[in-house]
Amino acid sequence: MVPAGSDKIWAEDSGGDGPVLVLLHEGVGDSRMWDPVWPELTRHFRVIRYDVRGYGRSPLATEDYTLLGDLQTVLAFYGVGPVCLAGCSMGGIAAVDLALAEPDQVSSLVLLCPGISGFSYPDEPELEAKCEALAAQGDLPGIARVLLSMWGRAGDDPVVFDLMLSSLRATENEEQFQQPGEPALARLGQLTVPTVLMLGDMDYPPLIESCTLAARRIPGCELIWLPGVDHYPTIRAPRQVAETIVRHCAS
Image 1 (spheres, rainbow, N blue to C red):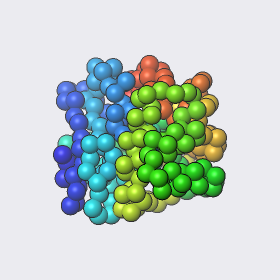
Image 2: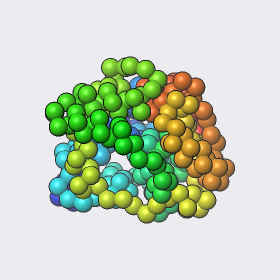
Image 3: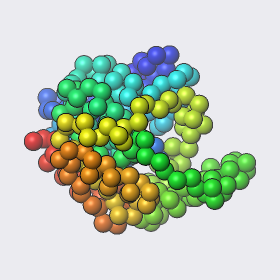
């Protein structure tokens, strides 16, 4: 458990002498999303992953925090840097924020269907109404199924369902305590870190729009399309994700 202000963050360090790779999970899951690629990545890197406050094995937050601040806290705890960063969705926000704030701390970026702060995502009133009705009944599995109609369009999978269900534990706590950082969309052209962006063609369409825009704005960014993949790339296409991270970060 890594101390973070008045709270704690669960983290795992594979150890070893290789280059340091830090894995940042998505907001519709937790750090277990990296399980399918963990064995391959730990063959090449010293790998660190952690659960954002309230997610997975990290206790609920009791104070305000930012994704960037907690990433910096974890790096300082382990005394590492510069590092390779692989960030998925919410984790991509943290990865980009660090690369903009402290470029000397980041040697390379792999962004998996990243959230792009500052992009205007549309409201989904029908979906929100369904979730609110299910929440009133205390039906978290029902909420998970509704949300997977947006984020899990590649098909039913028990691992994907469990990740989504687990993430719902953090939702209310996150809304109360997680504070946004400075929007990144207008600053993507300032990134100087070698970057790969991986994107599934079955992901949420507005997110596809934001990611393709980001890939055009990030200097030298390599955009890799994942056919038949939704918002869970490490579950749907683990081999391609692992191979891309190794190729991009080991070099």
